[in-house]
Length: 350
Image 1: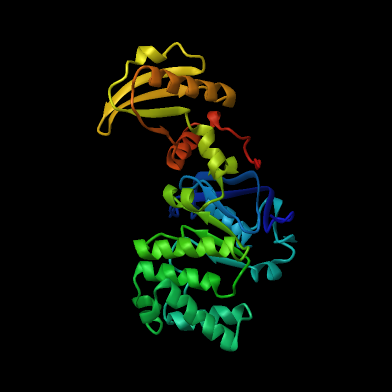
Image 2: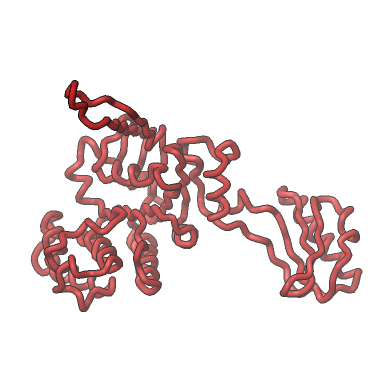
């Protein structure tokens, strides 16, 4: 990967304030403040996205994900810190930055509803200096790819929610940007379209060297696509790690040995490196489940000893599987109890 990231958030902070007033008092002609709320959408957040990388930003509703996307795209100004796109300060070089970014915000109001998909792409393409035959060719190719071939000349107001979402993605890609920001990109899409979008994201990053930031509530999509995951909660970056490392960090070292007959758990409890033993008899047949130490050498010795004892006991070993953690479970653990977070708040862990 390049030494210079395409996107960098450097100790970014953002706070929103809301005020609510009572109805106008007819006698005094004044309104009385009855509620004031402070929302910290970003608290000292730092992370980077490299060329060729898909970065997932996950968090509960109201955690600050969309605010982070808007700060990168220049729609929201941070109160503190700085945001850089390809080395350019977003605040100082906003016009240059916008030409390198394609954004799909959650919802379907990116497009202009009285226009057709082709007219929308012509409008947004011209805004980003894509014109003539190149614009026409790219517009048709994008609409064909996304599955809007038959809707090119239909007013957007007549499209379904999923079709509007597809068009929003085309608009984000019309200028062939180096950085793509996708806020809930698969919302409202059917299975085929969702698969096509995910394949396109991987193609853009792996083959073309673009970087993609994805926010989503679909943990399966994040686990499948993202090279690294940042989890944000109440404006704080709880952790930022490679996806495989994050899953491994929370995975218990449990190995299931599928056998031809039920084992006696007591035969395996006195082994060094074995924390717990359980004999199981599920739908797939009998199994021996062992929880072993995380330390590599101790884990290796324990597994070798288990296999040796199974051989001496005359068991037929049918398979060995390590029980894997899911991103959904990791997400719930981190956002439910911040005290157990594996990484310091607001800092990137590489």
